[in-house]
Length: 134
Length: 310
Image (tube, rainbow over all chains, first blue to last red; front, side):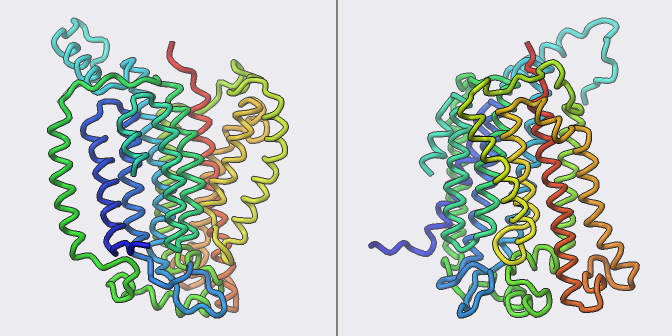
């Protein structure tokens, strides 16, 4: 078997991170942007876990006869980060749902053009005075 | 990697979400290979299970097909390419995979590995670090989850609306599914309890247990209809349960303060410090589990109880 160079994991991380980044900046669909953020997030998780790995190590649960364990600290950080990640994704999703209810679309361009159209034709006696745009 | 690329190209968002679930599961396998059992566990439960369900119920409320792209992707590809190249260049200095002399392994980790069994008295060091050494962090994370859940509820309103869709389930009336789910749900709940209380000996803990427990309810909800699920776990209990979980966690901290020790120092809980640690970790994990369970489930209720805009 060909020996995989030690940096291979980092390159996978960079690739996945860039894939997520690309989705976030280039795609107009808000749900897809959320998936892109998830990709990005997962790549960061892989980066941390890669750093915590130790060659010849075992999972950090103390058992007799095992003396080398991988680093538990990154595991702890990422474990909580995953759960926080799903919670924040849900917040994003809730925002997307509300945006869809307000605009009827989740495409960034359409939302933008709707906003611009609103701005160009200011209605007299605006029924939403609280909605000022800075 | 391939899955990620396909997911970017696809315009059917349903497919994108399912592929994202597969991607999460593969990530979990990778974590397992890298000796991170707890993390793999969490990723499999959260990424492949809950996130997919939540994204799908979000999709139900918006729309399935993505509009064709209007911009030229070249510019963003260029930006991404440059950033990626810079990052790859940076990795050339990074320590190799599994290198014992890398800085990550030099700082506090050896101390945790050597002292955790004597000081906290539990073989799973991840749980020991999570709940005891870094209890502040975990308290913060629990609060973030709590806040995020509240934000979702504020945005989507408290879930009610079960009267209108009473007795109808998301998947329709399917006998095979009903029988299978009826068999599975008790096992899932039992397994979640095992994960919750066995977390200090094996892989597991409050975060995973909360998610798995919520998964059981979500499954029940999908097959038997939300009215039935809400009869078992009323929606207006969930925010209270979430607050109760945070209260348990914080209460343990306050108790140790009142006993003259620093915040979240569990040795105050019992005459024997190790036993106190054990009790403290168990209580704190319980708080985390309750909060995570109720937040995940209330997010699901909030998303699934809402009807799509006609």
